[in-house]
Length: 119
Image (cartoon, rainbow, N blue to C red; front, side):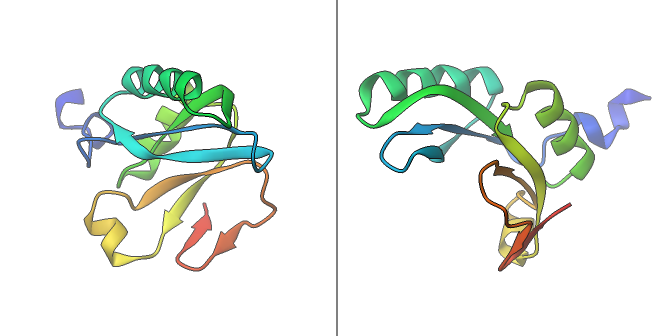
């Protein structure tokens, strides 16, 4: 029964995106790479903060994909502490690319913007 469940299927092969504290702007910022697993993401983010000036701990990762419930569960279980909400992308390009549901970091009062809104 679980084998056919949409929650067990990824809509994108690299759904994890990392973030770290950026000392230059005094807030958390996304790393514009993506990874296959949450563990790969966290390991890469630890290396990034050790080698890139301006980036610091704490680090974390967020999950994105085309299934709202999967994105919510994965971020609730393994997403970082700085994730504010699950974002619904309204762009057809994002949806077709497997990223209909993304994540927003804490620190911005905005709950919606051009092409997205918090669900």
